[in-house]
Image 1 (spheres, rainbow, N blue to C red):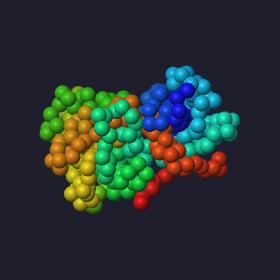
Image 2 (tube, rainbow, N blue to C red):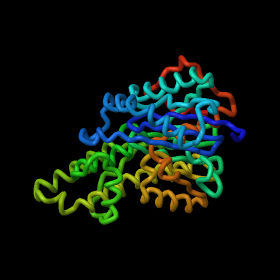
Image 3 (spheres, rainbow, N blue to C red):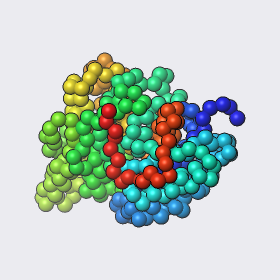
Image 4 (spheres, rainbow, N blue to C red):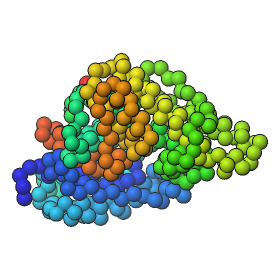
Length: 343
């Protein structure tokens, strides 16, 4: 095989079982097995998620190794998501990773899930040129909404985060209110293309500094729908696209307002980026591009396969740690809460 470092990475923080194989900063395989069992419950059920990880992880690992066209004997290190996430799900991935590390006699690398989302931008062959530092990254997902100043591949500074719900959760809640199935974020985006984003005015969260809040916005949306439904039982049916477009506009407005404030108050920056599952939203990407242009910066958003939870981002984060020999002990506990390390 070619010289370099082969890393097998495992991601199991929520309801996606993923295993990737990397060679330096190149991804040779990135296998993701999603759990559809949660759809009938309208959200992720932690116990069911951990059981599904147990059922899937061995086969997903086998598939990744096969696609990468290597054998386990070529692996130089095993990486895994230590946190944050659902504790039961994390334990499945960490236990599997630790067992492989012992069996193969190779080092173990623990990775912060949130930092990995940021570092997904540095997977090879995504862009003509990688983002320049310092970079402002807006991480937006179902569980997290954060603004992070990235000095380099090893130094992160948390500037602000949601004080309650995440943006992705607000999308899913809005979808449920107007009768869409879970997960509803992508469905809201699709419907919004057909709607008028200015049809309904929603609450504008007024949160100090660079933090976010989406609980009030969700409540405002619910009250608006209930108020109109009392007068017109067909209100949702007749206004579904406009409701989706209005909610999407409100969420993005809040996100962009804080991102703009961060650029003004914590810069200078050389690039801006989106990360996390909601970064797949095309309207959000367009708004971030426009904001970057206002400041004369380049804007980046990862390939779709690197937006949602995936092991490729764990692999690239581990690659940087491997270069500095930042390994961990088998005794390292999984952490349901694991903040971005501020420098």
